[in-house]
Image: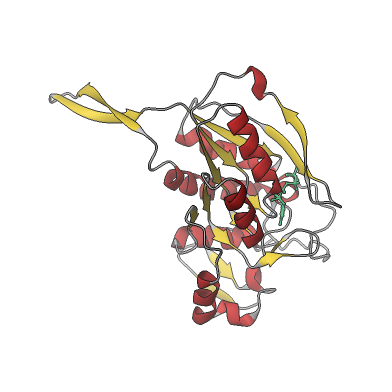
Length: 265
Ligand code: PRP
Ligand code: URA
């Protein structure tokens, strides 16, 4: 396999892009894909960020094992969450430094995170690191394999104290059904501002979420080409829940999973 050697122990293979049409891998192809992205004023994509792109390439690679997958998911989530929280409302407070008094800014609203189980759970360590002590509102949703419709199976929001701003955490925005159900549930609970933070989106998911919840800002590392007939994002990364938890019988390409020990980050 052709490899490009990067700094230190980092080795980036071309393997992650093996199923991508060759024209897309060219500079012009990339530009075209960017231009063809769904036009949504609420969509924020960070595929131009060198480090996010690098980590995402490894995350997509089918050889990346669950422990590394979880670590990369956390690292990319941390970067995306820092962008998604950049404009949180703040208020002035007086602070006295060892040198003298000053006026500084602190968060003005209650912020919580709403990870969608299972895959969104992998983004919680980043959320904890960024805003320690912020409430975590688990939402249990899975997609019915036949209909691709989200099925709710866990929701304890009823008894929780309110938050003003909630960030939905889910690596994958595929049809958008799960994100729409989550956004509707958070609004029903009284959340004023809902934001979606994910890693990879399909154009279909961006379109549905933007249409049903135009007030929800969407932060993702990349927007891919399309969904396949099984509702998986192409090229995507496969099943984000299975890849974190080592529960996949196969990968959605139908190929057997062949770990290659030299694929070390
Ligand atoms: C995945 C993913 C999202 C959902 C996205 O969950 O984590 O929640 O699919 O698909 P959608 O945009 O078409 O709704 P999945 O149903 O595989 O459950 P899991 O995380 O428990 O494996
Ligand atoms: N859920 C996943 O985990 N992966 C996809 O590609 C689509 C939905």
